[in-house]
Figure 1 (cartoon, one colour):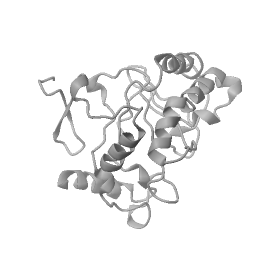
Figure 2: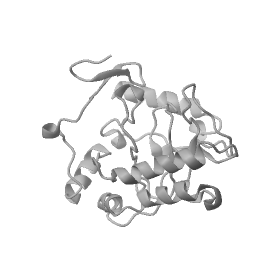
Figure 3: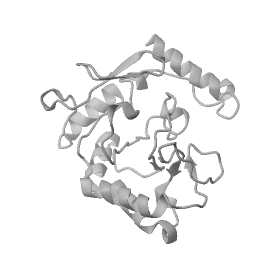
Figure 4: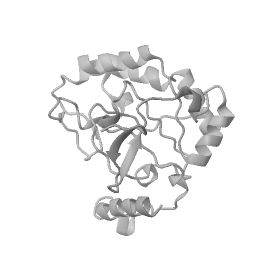
Length: 227
């Protein structure tokens, strides 16, 4: 349902969360990409920053068009995110959206996915995106991993550092790029501001991904509820 405050959805801990339906230009809190120091200050304080209209629409459309031509009809095996350690065939939702997302566009075979791979790399190497990444890191970035999502996999609440990070924790930056407009009720990407300041357990021991993953997921919900 909608309200004056926005679109209501259920938060991971079961509470109600309000999502804005539209951007109010006059009250938008996010700095412009032309102000790298302000971007870095916001990122350091809140753990994330939104940069609007950064990637040109034509680049986004090129990725989606190539995906529709080369990837979606493909009947073979590809590595996915989250990864089972094995390549898998496509799994679709009841509405025909890909649920097991594509892992590492840059590693796809160019003989089968030339246009999709090339379009993805154009987005990753776009000068505007690189400038923002450099502002956040204080140096040029290096691509470690990439993912392509079509359907909503309903990912559980987590801190990325539990699954993937640099040797010096916190030196890895994730960029989420919206290639199309997303309806408020479709399951948007969300971040709890300043949650990066909470010192959670790291992967290993009683919170091992392979054997005790449910304990970690339960801990995250507890932290959300307490904070």
